[in-house]
Image (cartoon, rainbow, N blue to C red; front, side, top):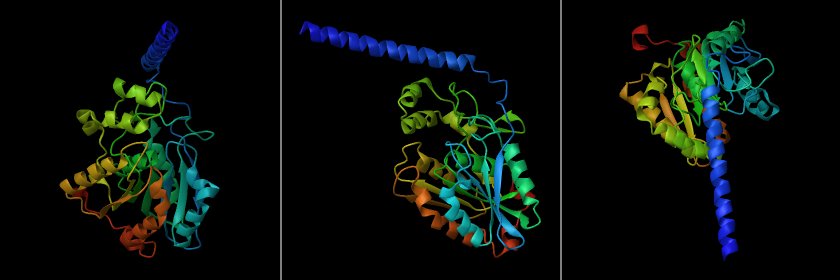
Length: 310
C-alpha cells in the first residue's frame, strides 16, 4: 500500500510540475513576444485566378481557414471551382498565410493587402469589378466578414462555420490580433488564462467559449456585419468541435435584424462537425444564383445609398 501511495504522490508531483512548467512557459511567451514588429512578409498574399469563357464575369473569392495555404486552389476543390466557373463566375483562390512569400502564421494579416489583391484581379477586362463576393470558411469566414464590413466593393458574403468577432492570431504567445486594417491591429477577443489548459489539450471549443464569456471584449471586437454592402449567407454545424460557430452565427443574425440590415441574410444549420457546411456547397450555389446571379450583372452591381452604410 505504501508503494502505491508513494507512486501516486510522485505522479501527482510530476503532473503539478509539468503544469507549472507549461504555465510558466506560456507566461514567458506572452510577455516576451514581439508585438511591435510586424510578421515577415506582412502584406503579401498569393492568388490563383480561374476564368470562364464569358465577358463581365462576377468575381468569387475563396478564402481558406486556419490550415493556411491556398485551399481553394487545391485539386480537392477543383470540381467546385469548375462548377462555379461553369455557371458564369470567375474564381480567385486567395492564400493569405502559410505559403512561400506570405506570412508564416495567421498573425496580423493585412486586410488591405487582401483587398488590394482582389481589386487587382477585378481589373481584368473579363471580370465585372462591380460584382465581387467572398466565400470563406472558419478563420477565412472571420476574414471575409471583417473585410466585407469595411470594404463597400464586396457585394455578397458566404461564411461557413464563421466567427462573429476578430480573434487572436495563431502565435505561441496568443496576444496579437489576427488581422490589421490600414496598418493597425483590429480589436480582438483575448485569451483568458483559464482557457490555456483547454488550448494545451487542443480542446478548442471550450477555450473559445471562455473567450466569448468576456462580453465587453467581444463587443469591442465584434464584426460590424451590418455594414456589409450586400446579402450574407451564414452556414454553421450542429456540433462544431473547434469553436461555437452556430452561437456566433445566431449572434450575427440578431445584430443584422436589430440594425435593420436591408439585404437578404440567411443562416442555415447543418448536422455534423466544423466541416459540415462544406458538404452542402449546393446551398452556396443556390444562394449565389438567387442573391448574386452571374446572369444579371446589373443586379449584383447594385449598391445601397451612402447614407445607409454607416
